[in-house]
Amino acid sequence: MAKIVDAWFSFYKKNYVIEPTFNGAAAKNLKLIVERLQKLADKAVPKYEWTEEYALKVTNHFLRKPLLSNG
Image 1 (cartoon, one colour):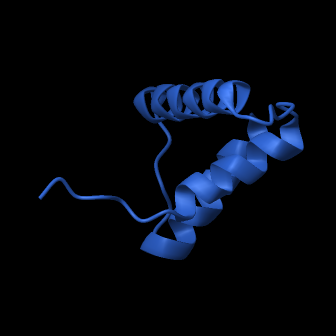
Image 2 (tube, rainbow, N blue to C red):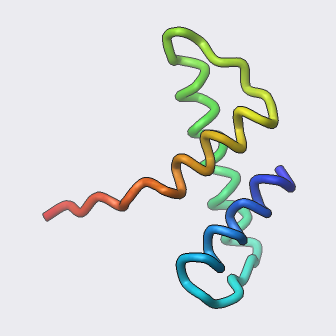
């Protein structure tokens, strides 16, 4: 999980140019995101092995995707 946190910090600093805060709520939210990405990988066809390398790749992909608006 440490590499995923590092990826989040790097992404945040690059895109928002300020040092991010990482309190308990942010840690919980990041953990929930990673757990959801892992569940999606487990359901994928073909199935992907959830290694640290793959987790980092998927998390970086998730971070780079633009947010979709509801309107």
